[in-house]
Length: 314
Image (cartoon, rainbow, N blue to C red):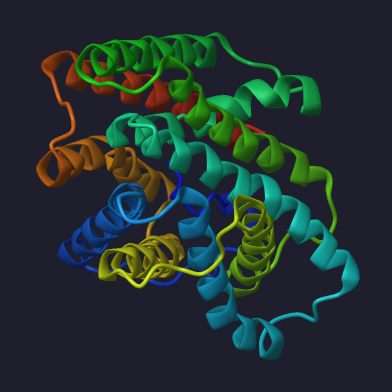
């Protein structure tokens, strides 16, 4: 349910809610949000044809962080050492770890829609990780929803294995990336200084991630970006559409619409990504994969509704 930037909604303060826009404006806003939310996976799929994954992630995060740096320094709360340390740790798991998982999976040939679907299973992973870390009690409805969602992912994966040529181990990568984000999302509930305005959070975590990818690229023997237009189109796509527009519209929507309505639209991101990847790159798309996608999304919706009921009753 999150974009490839790999950040949790709980990382940020949501602005004060304003009056809801008219219905057609709301649906237009959510439609544009859905396109931008899905664009990260497509942008990465496009970019991997022009450069190594680590090089793409280095320049994507470095440019995004540097663009946001003046705003992060001049506006918002003072960035203390404690804040920088906490945000750096969060960034290594939530952004760098998450990006590495899905980006390398796409690079190895895992269908882009399946990667987006696994990323959308974040609520399920958060529930499971909350059991040992927070002592959270899971209801029967949540267990049912998780079982249905996993069944759907297995259906999509079986269809992808039959139609694709990615190695089996590559299908584990987006799961590891998603678990990295889920772990830090749950863990940061106990950390101080984990809440900042979005521009400061994205700046710090982008620059920390860029430092990690710089080390990876340096060890690989290449830091300079290629001069190919395709590389820069992919990088700018990821920065403008996936990072700035995706997250900007997400929090703009949350300030004007209910979280349930925004989240329900974002559940459409995996099928949109799968259709988009089919149209642009000819990736596999079968009836079995479509049915599996629907089953998974139904399971995620069930889990999210039970979680919403639990929070409202708390």
